[in-house]
Structures are given as C-alpha cells and as structure tokens.
Image 1: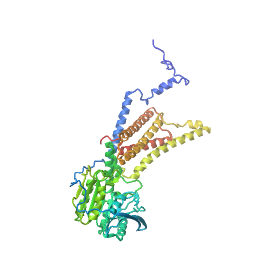
Image 2: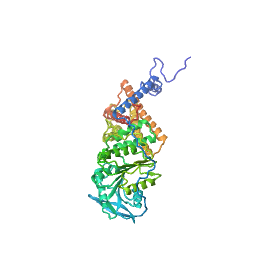
Image 3: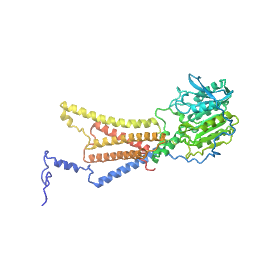
Image 4: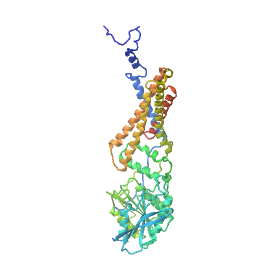
Length: 546
C-alpha cells in the first residue's frame, strides 16, 4: 500500500487553492535556477569559477610587468677586516664648544649648529653635513658624527634642511646643492677653519646632492658618501622594497606589485625627482671620496654603490676612492642604536689626514658585503601606469555601486509613497522588482569585490609595516595573502552565481531588472565589480604562476 502524500495533488486533481501553500513551495524548489541537489549544476559552477580565475590571471599578467631582478655578479674585493685608515694621524681629544648660526638662503634662512674643538690650533679642517630624507633639524641630526669630528680637531657644521622647497612630491637636488653650498661658504669664513680644507659629509638622500656640490664648487676638499643610494630614487626604492619583502618572507606573487607600484606615476602628480640620475655629476668629481656602508643595510645597493662610485669618478681621472664596510651596521652606520665607534674614528682620521689619506691603504676594508640583486631600471607597466587612473578606479567603482544601491532604495521609497497616495493599481501594473534572486546576488557580488580590495589594501599596509621593522609574522604574511586570494575567489563565485541566476530568469521568461532604475543599478554593480576584479588581477590576487 502506497502511503498518501498530503499537500500534493493527485493525477487529474486541481492545484490547491491559495490557502494551501505546500504546492507553491514545491514548485519553487523545482525552479530551474535552484542548483541544490543537482551535481551537474555544481560542476558548472566550479568550472565557471575556475575559468573566471584563469581569465583574470591572464588579464593580470598582460596588464603589467613581472618582477625578475637581475643577480649581481660583480663583487667587492675586501682587502682586510681592519677598517683603520692607513696614514691617518693619531687622534687627540678636545673639549667641544657649540654655537648656533644663521645661514642666509635665497628667500629664507636656516639655522645651523657648529661644533668647534676647544684648544685646537688652527686653521682647522671643516666638514658640512648634508641630510638624508626627512625634516633634517640640526638638533637631532648627526650629533654623534659632528661631536666625534670636533673632539678630534675638525670643525663640524650641521645646518637645518631647507623645508619650504622640500616636500614629498617635489625635491630639486640641484637647487638643494646650492643651498648647502651657502653653509660651505659660511664655514669657510669662520676664523677657526682653513677655507681650503672644507669637506662634505652626505648621508642617504644626501648622496644625490653632494656630487652636485662637488662639481659646482671644485674647491671642496673631499666628499664622504655614507649609505649613498647612487642609483636613481625609483631604482633604489624598488631595490629596497624587494629586499624588505624577501626578508619578511612574502609569497612570490606579491613581488609582482613592485614594478606596478614603483613604476607608476603617483596620484596627484609630482615626484619628478624619482628619476634623478646622479652619475653625470659623479663622473665629473675630482675630489677624493670616502664611501661608507653597513653590511646590515638592506635598503641600499652596498656592493653596486661602491663599484659605481669608483667607476664614475674614474671618468674624471679620479682614482682616490676609499671604501669601508662595517659589520651588521644599519643605514645610519649604527649597531644596537649606537653609531659604530670605529666608523667615527675612521672618519676623523680620514678627514684630518687629507690630502695624505686621499689614496690611503687599504682601499677597501671591513666586513665582506653581500648584495644578491642589481638595483636596475624598474619595468614600466604597460597599462594602468597612471596613478590618478588607478586611484580613480579604486574609488570610483565602489562609488558607482553605492550610487546604484542608493538609486534602488530611493525608488522603493517613491513607490511606497505613491501607493499610500492612492495610485496603487497604476504602480502595480508596472513591474518594479528584480527577477527572483538577482538583487541578492548583485549585493553579494558588490560586497565581495569591495571586501577583497579592502583586504588587499590592509594586507599591503601590514606587510609594509613588518618589512620596515624587519619582522616576520607567518599569520599575517602567508595567512593574510591566502585570505585575500580566497576573498577574490568568493567574488568570482558571486559573479558566476549571478550569471546563472540571470540566465535562469531569462529562461523562465521573466524580467531581470525591470525599469530604468533597476537597469542602471544592475549595470552599475556589474561595471564596478568588473573594474575591481581587473584591479585585483593587476595586483596579483589571481596570479597562477604566469
């Protein structure tokens, strides 16, 4: 005996009337758009997602360059681990007197600290310090270096950096050289100083300024280049980011972002100095040069830099290059937060011994440096190179989707207001709703793409902080990247499910997005999501090793 199934009509029986809702629920479950329980639908969804990810991976590969830095094959031959300057005089110790002076510049002035050795018989050699990147206030900068020089008999001058013409977006290294030369002139006029024996000490970014000073003023006695980038700023930035990311242990796919971020123009313009080339000035330098690096400085091309300085000055017939490497020292030649004492003594000895120490033995000494890759030209993106365009896409796409949602919400308010006003029949005559399930899938697609972009931004900021602090965190570095990529796959899945739902609604003869407002909303979400998926592909979220 077959048991009776209640709620379902028998053959030939009429469909239950409205109060009986079981039949309606069964019909809905059998709707062609419902994939549950149908393996062929699941396979199609999986295949659609896989195809979408592959297509996005191809798009990402086509839109921008790979990052394949060239291994550095040249090496620096270190002659001895002992860094002392051959022929340098014995160092004496003096008390130090500090004075603050004003340095007049074109249109403004800066303050400067001058450290004078008390009791040293003059005239004495002098050194003017040139700042690296940052604000460059004399009260905080080069305190250990200037004091060590003064204690050993050298007059040291640390001027403030001129900031009214120095911003993140604009830096003119040639003009900055002229400003620092004003300090050189002022130091030469000091009664304690021998005007023919004034040298320049430049650190980091100052390495792009000091060679210009040396060429514009050939009477500068010598140049000290400490942690000098040597290559253009864009190349140095890419080199540093690569080194930091490798130290942090990021997945290989993340390296794709280096040429795309460093190679593009910055939003809002500026940054012309990113491609400043200092080599033409270095090739005209005739002064002796002391090149100094710490082997723990991952941000600078410590091998390539010394070799390039030596090659460049040789163009002017200058072979007076002394190179020193200090074991485990960082960008500021510090170990454990303190400037390496041996460096301070070597600096003083080299300056005091000039001109006899200009070609002192050993020419290259200290710890053996290691630089795995060349700091070379950064590949330029073929597409999306304009930072303004990139920023506009990242902001504009979510804004378009938000506008689409607001338009639908506003239309619903208008509909409800109109119905309350007595025009219910006229409103009901016109279709006003999305096809069943379309609105929900549009919402999920928009949310998934925006969430993936936000997750990617968070991830890049997080690894940047880890990289700058020389830290590792597998949960953030590896786990965060997996989470971003999974969100990207969810966004693709949302797009596939939306496409299938639209197909089923069309197949059933129903309207997908009736009316102007819902039509606009649909295309707004689709366009915004497509843009964000392409942006995510560009930054490597869907990379498959191509």
